[in-house]
Image (cartoon, rainbow, N blue to C red; front, side, top):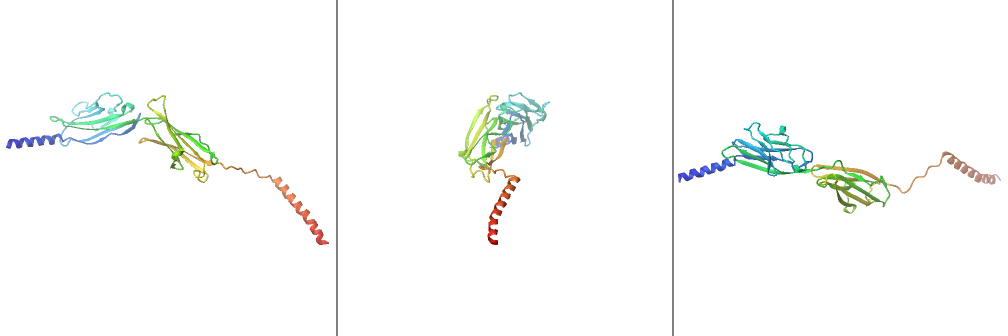
Length: 277
């Protein structure tokens, strides 16, 4: 009986030691731009155990190892899409640079304690790599002035991106009605087959409902969440259907005044003559 009690206590102690290493926080960004950099953070608590190693994996393939007992403690294994800045990396942080499309994937941090148990804990997260457009949205087809009931027609386009961008038209800072909008359409880039240009059309009749006080503000908004948001904005006006004629010159005004004076004199002379008689 006593022997069984000792055995149970030993098993409980062993299970407790297995759980001694604790991974506190894994800091891996969910989205990063192509060509940029990313910091991978792995915070852990040994809780009395001794650190044996910290390893990083991408899609199950080891690319970074930190073993404090070794000299040097850092090992870097070449992996497609993974470029480690060793000078900026340590046991808790790994710096990635020059991100490419191949950099996307699952990144796992694995922390192990020393012998004899080599207790290991791990956690992983996925990184998406976006190709951001070179520049902002471009609007073509708009004019400065429109007559009432004339068609307002414009195309908004965004340079190639991955993933496809979300375009939105706003009229006077409000989302354009669905009947005003056509598209979107996508055109695959010849330089980057993995990216596409996005196009969205706006079409409506110029009315006083949209041209408030004779003006309307149009805005095309482009978004690739959560890394990119740009917009193009412009104001347009109602063209009045009439024009003001040129005023007469001073000599014409003078001639009209003289003619009026002569006419009045011609009317007054007979009246004065009758009074005198």
